[in-house]
Length: 468
Ligand code: FAD
Image (tube, rainbow, N blue to C red; front, side, top):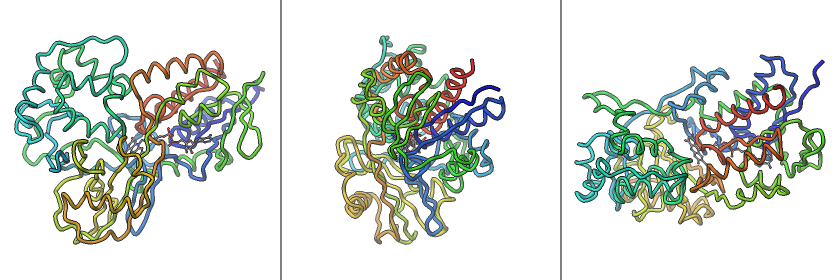
């Protein structure tokens, strides 16, 4: 009989959970004799996914949803029996706060790039000069660049500084919590470079490939995101329930990994050693570098910065909001005198999350230039947020309750050259650490579907390594 193979997954976030789930599924379906262990250093399974149920509210401390067009997250939810629980976001007007004033997000824009002319022409977000500069994209010749370039510089060249600072930057830094002039185009939106090369213009390229028709009167905007009725934590629970008993070990940190003649030894924080024939490293890059500190080729992970962010969810009685805005939330431009970076009207974006007659706001702090705010006390963060909110809304009462969450070193910064660095490290791992694979938000995409894709790819790599 074929010898049983031992696979250890390090990290119990969505990437590690996906890996363990699909490994066991493959093993069952294809009769591979596999033993899978998932080691998680904390007492909480799910990593950044963390749902709190309180007084009838469903509150996400980490991610609240995933992009529907990237299919792996919805597929995983259906796999684990949650197909009926998938909920689309409530759509509505979103805003951008520029120079202290809320402006409507121009309709027909994709990630801030205009695809229809009229909403841009009439937007108060840009001066006539800013609008004319953006229109230059239609005629400005393309620039072919070998390798990577900065996301910010790319957009500045195509559309000008105003569109970048008042629209693109606030939208993108909401996703990456970074400085867009340092972030990598290749690792974030490589398709925008391809559009420039193919169509000579971003606006023309998007119109061809992603036409956004003017909605008919009364027609609702399509919802782009999905979540689960009882929160994303229910996905973690459903996966956990489907893992074979004894798969997950919480509260044990992998301190060090050594390559041996017949596989790997993982030295754990409880003093024990776990042996493995293959390993999936679904932990952040800095943790991986520490586990394998004897390998110099992982040094670039030491220099890969990860920013910290905090958010505060605040529950109110609807009567407390005197000047409400009809919409789903706003992002804040850097040139505004605000410390919050964004605010979601969660009760409108996700109506199922909030009991009738109540309001749930979720605000974010922690710009790259304001990292110290994350270390402030709960009371201080709440005060900063309410102070900022009252510049645009009129909130007369204290929240019925609030939940502050800090995420330290949580947002890995994909700076220029990131993809190449990860590729080089991966190639070197194939030589020096065969059977060890990286997956997760430090490497090839930060969205939940990207993490799930990476978990699935790591499973295929492990199967190929062990059996083909
Ligand atoms: P993690 O969730 O970080 O999991 C890694 C796990 O490894 C952790 O549990 C950690 O404890 C464990 N670990 C670390 N070191 C060791 C060790 N030595 N030994 C054992 N275990 C170890 N994405 C979206 O798609 N939609 C959103 O709405 C969204 N919103 C977000 C909001 C916030 C506030 C944050 C912080 C992120 C958000 N993201 C969102 C991004 C997304 O949540 C993450 O990219 C994703 O959850 C990362 O999953 P992961 O499994 O790769 O890593």
